Amino acid sequence: MSDTADAVVVGGGTVGAWCAYFLRRAGLARVVLIEKGFLGQGASSRAAGVVRMQGGTPEAVRLGIWSRRFYLSQHDEIGTDSGFTEQGYLLPCFTEADVAAAEQRMAMQTALGVPVTWLDPREVDAANPTLAPGQTLGGTFCAQDGFIAPPRNVAAYTVALIRSGAEVREHVAFLGLTADGPASGCTVETSRGPIAAGMVVLTGGPKLAAVGRLAGLRIPAGGVRHQVAVTERHPDLDPARVPMVFDLAAGLYWRPEEGGLLFGMSNPDEPPGENREVDEEYLAKMRARLAALVPVTAGLGLRRVWAATIDYTPDHLPIIGRAPGLERVTVACAGGAGMMWGPGVARAAADVALTGASDVLDTSPLGLDRFDEAGHSRLATDPIALPFPERIASS
Ligand SMILES: Cc1cc2nc3c(=O)[nH]c(=O)nc-3n(C[C@H](O)[C@H](O)[C@H](O)COP(=O)(O)OP(=O)(O)OC[C@H]3O[C@@H](n4cnc5c(N)ncnc54)[C@H](O)[C@@H]3O)c2cc1C
Image (cartoon, rainbow, N blue to C red; front, side):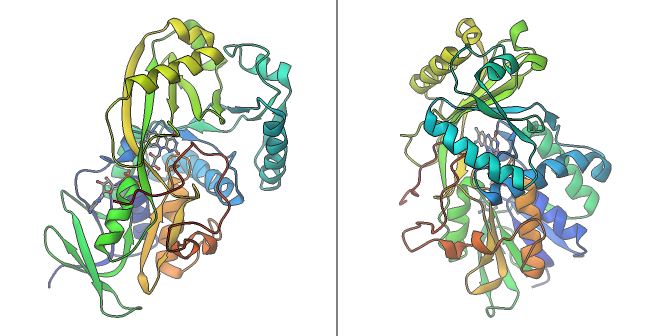
């Protein structure tokens, strides 16, 4: 076998691509990224781009802080960027239980350095004049949260990969791997022949479970349909007047986009599995909920609608860790939050692959060993997430 690499990274989404970049920057001479289609063809080019530090667990907060900083420093580092826009993010509370949960979260977030503040109901209405007044019991707000432009992020990591000297192989599928021993390098089987690799990082977003199966691993990660739409422009929706908002209980979020609103919502009853068809019936429910909270959207047409498969894990937390029994194989998944956590997950995965630990965050609770045979996690579920399924499709 003549083809060799210090590291092979599987998957050209935001997690795999930034991971390959970090591995190269850490000094590995030959980093090869294999992607069965083309860079960004998975979830990473289809996302809504929301980036928030207001996470529901300390791990989520740390990854949000790290990734936001990375987006802000990107231009100096690689000459282009992912289009991070600081917009401010409001998480309104509609019940006393929401308020109690928000207070607890704020204490944790503040202790970790997130500049999150509590807005009383009148302050919420003042901060967001498009919101129907008198709806909330207050909410948490972080002015430094924002969003990236997902296609621009794909362009940014493509440039970063090329500049760093990582080798990108598109239209090359991962087919499996064999390791000579638990601590030895691997032979990576691909659709273009084998590669002898010192280490391997497996990503795959919504397809990570299938990638894992090819490597003989059981990875409890799934994919499920998620819909996003963008309204027509309206003067009331000028970005200067509209913070981003997450109506957590409904699983509906929105942010300004080109003079209109971009909004997304997950159907909690959606069965797991790949699906990119637009569900018109559910889209009507999304529009109704949005119109109840942002009345100006009721009369607006839609300029874009799309559905794509989003990745998730049963506890809605990322997976970052070495594969059990295979020291040279690392698994990385952003758990459906690859815009807000992706660069942090990617850097932590590169660190874990190289040294077993990371200064991004303590990855020891986030490995595959937190799941039991049925895929149940022993960690508490991240409460600030879309209503993802908590089970994985059996197929
Ligand atoms: C509609 C939608 C909206 C979203 N909105 C947000 C948001 O606002 N904020 C946020 O944080 N996150 C959001 N997400 C989630 C985010 O997009 C994902 O978490 C992130 O893109 C996952 O990145 P990834 O690199 O793990 O996966 P992907 O981008 O899916 O990349 C995985 C890659 O692996 C490749 N691959 C699979 N199998 C193989 C194989 N056998 N061999 C080689 N290559 C293979 C695929 O072709 C793919 O390109 C959204 C997702 C969707 C779908």
